[in-house]
Image (cartoon, rainbow, N blue to C red; front, side, top):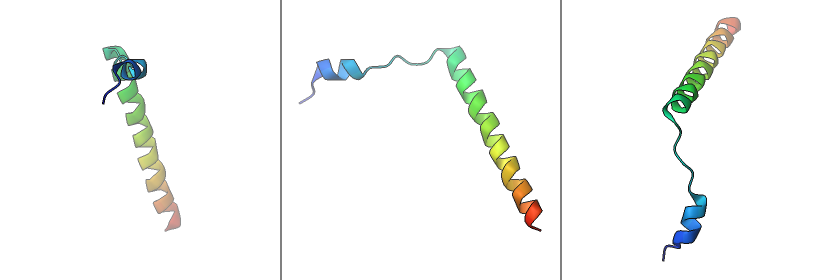
Length: 46
């Protein structure tokens, strides 16, 4: 059975739009840097 009081304690509000945008942009930048690092490592091995 669901304990609603416990579930409400776990509740976290969703991010605001600006926070979502910041979160997405920061992960995009990290992904791009990871890809560049991977590419440069492959080039250095040759």
